[in-house]
Image (cartoon, one colour):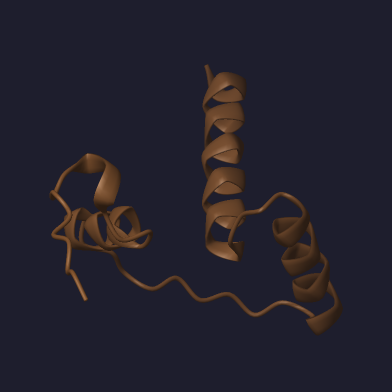
Length: 75
């Protein structure tokens, strides 16, 4: 039996390498809690799944958009 050694490089990374790099390089975060109806949470979760995003990503994006719109209105 002959063993071959693969060259290390960009093309030979573990599939989860990018995910781990994001976690390591991520800015310090803090938990944000909100009480919402279970049915609303399920709707948000379903929406996130259809968009291939996490609930956190959906909520953060929604808050960013809301703050941008509020700034436009207050000017």
